[in-house]
Length: 82
Image 1: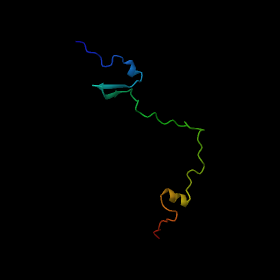
Image 2: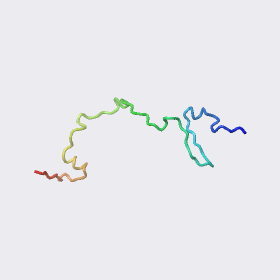
Image 3: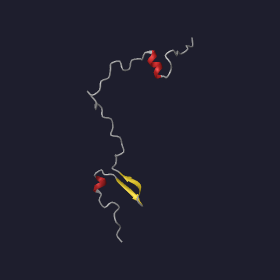
């Protein structure tokens, strides 16, 4: 008795199509091309000319703003050890 191939048409998964393997109509596995779940990687310069960053974006915040970000009132002050 000749066995039937599992995937008679290999061109579908080879071309990048995802195949769901089911048993009794319940999905049990996914056949995907190698690298399909890997991140595409970083593309440097993708937003060049699209965004603008202020010169002082990393300057220290005024004390009142710093305290607001920390969830404390502006009147809060750290005690010094001296």
